Figure 1 (cartoon, rainbow, N blue to C red):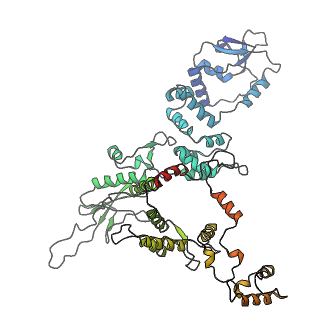
Figure 2 (figure 1 turned 90 degrees about the horizontal axis):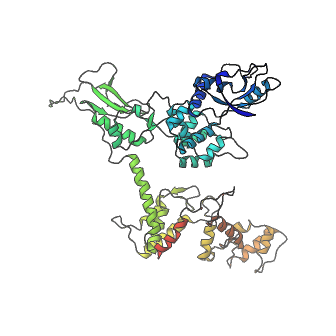
Figure 3 (figure 1 turned 60 degrees about the vertical axis):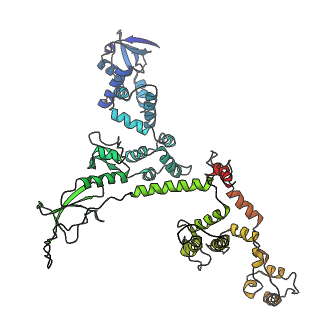
Length: 555
């Protein structure tokens, strides 16, 4: 084989080529644009004419030759090989069948690679015969989480709507959702609808906004273009719903007519009009009123209504014509602002708890307050077994005792001790139902000597719960000898324990060593914790690195 430069117009088409149907015009346009931009990447394969001619017959690359002629190239490089016995029919068929379109994921990554080495979006668009908008769309898809892209490259692709939602989300959001839905060996398919549903956000579109760019800037609204939408429509949107609705609300306030009111939509999406108001569907009169409201999509809607003729009040000449609902005023802080304050307060509170110097008595008081929080659930051991509370009144009263009449945290040590003891009584439980605090309650009872407060268990009711062997073992240390019948042994033990306290060994508080070791092993934080697949995991305790700071604050 050898490479030669030849005039593409001098090449002879192969009558035995496999592809004879007309090629796709879009594919031809793409190939033509590519040849114009970078030339022919893979030279066509030709063979000398077998009928005695001096020309060359195209064995592979008919479309490349045709588009090279269309591009006006005077010469192209070709690979000259030996003519096949079948005229190149098999070679043409094999090459045609072997061609495979580039994987979409590889296409996205390839475009990113071109940008990285200096290609502009415009130049790439010209070379690939695509619009600049399409290139930007592909570049957006290239920023999908790498783990998702790797899976998509295997052929498991989401549909365009799902891909659109995924690509619009941040990498951090994608990472969190992917953890919950990534494929496993047993189920290699990804539920893309669940992934997209977890990343979907409410979009408010610029085309539906009544406010202008100045008001949008004042509310901090930055528009994002939806590159998946048709190019001939305004697809700009924002996911900052609170800011969008706030700007719409202010626009209505600024543009409210003289006899206008601002109202809200009801459950069915209809405006809430004043009582006895009659909605006007035709042309309004000058005496009619205007109501402006936001529909379910956040768009400003306007309706007209008419109030009934006011009845003249006795002894009062006022007509009351303008006594209509007053416009609603926007609150000083929006719902989103309240949520931001909550986040900022929480961060500051945690930072202060970790760094600020706090006296021991204050720490004890704060722990009591924490148990009274409305986000804390306590299954009550004293409420009949069916009561559980979130900062309920019975538990919160112990925290309330630490405040003075002016609402300040003020207490003496005796009051604090009572509050702490009372709170511990409310929380710790060894009952074998949902109120059981578990092994921590056993450890707490052991450290404070609660074994000495256990009552006499040598009763008929408890001893009837013991097996024969356990019952006979309870006779040790007493004058009772095991009887032939279990009930006789039990009756003798009940009589013997009337004068002394019997506590069964299984009732002592000291936890089983193996159980305690297992609990400590599962709850002790280590820096070497790993995921099951062997990859490094984040520390179980996110504040592990702050412990030294806590110690310093304590000192």
